[in-house]
Length: 126
Image (cartoon, rainbow, N blue to C red; front, side, top):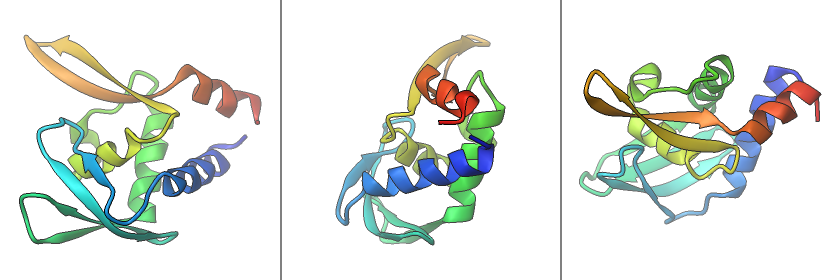
């Protein structure tokens, strides 16, 4: 399966996991946000602590998937700014991703990465 088809399939299966009002933890888990609405164009979310809604476009989310594909050792929040907590939090819902925590420079750094199963699926063309 080429990377573009894989990214599209992953995006569509992420949308299948969502529903309006679903509460999702941010990537660091310190805050939650609620799914306001979603479509194939993107996802609108609202942080629990703010009244502001944030639109996460399909293009932005596909960029995150492309980074997950490119970086086999995982993606850190800084790599997908500006709404990294939200984007990576949504992808934590996906069964093809997992969160790992590594010690770097004396700090615990969370990374999101594709599971071995997802990498095999991508490599085999399923």
